[in-house]
Image (cartoon, rainbow, N blue to C red; front, side, top):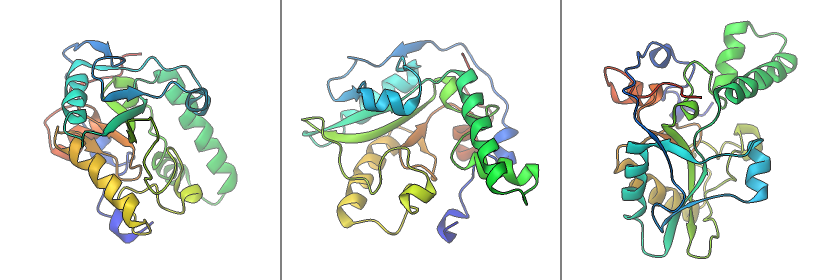
Length: 224
């Protein structure tokens, strides 16, 4: 792992798992059509990559913040949301599938080590943000829907991206770095927290957000 990532929390970190949740029942709302500069990726390629048909639902506060974030972008740019709410059952399937694959590849590792390795890129169901409606995956596109260069494709892991999936990767072109800064500035400005192992993954109100901001509790629990 690059040394600049050592200071960041992984999803397997006990500080994330120990966060308590006080879910007030905030509504889930669709983001389709709520802001002209906030788009969703309904392409066949994205849906095939996700492995299920998404509903693109988030909690109301997340929707409000996404609207505000999109409005701070330069006039010719849009936020393009790749995924939002993910069924908890599917989260469990993804985690267990990756855990099994890594166990086969690394028979020398103990269960705790395998869980930590799996958790870098697939959240354990007990801390995952997507099933809460508080997490989303996003990039930036131009007014024609063309995605900006971000250094690697959405959802590429460390091996496939040669480490460029890390939010603060050093092996980026200057253009990719500038584009990431544009994305990060607009989302950080609304209080969203990035998962530093994946430049596209952001959240508000989930356990990772609470741990990263030293909040006394998470706002959202899994809803599906």
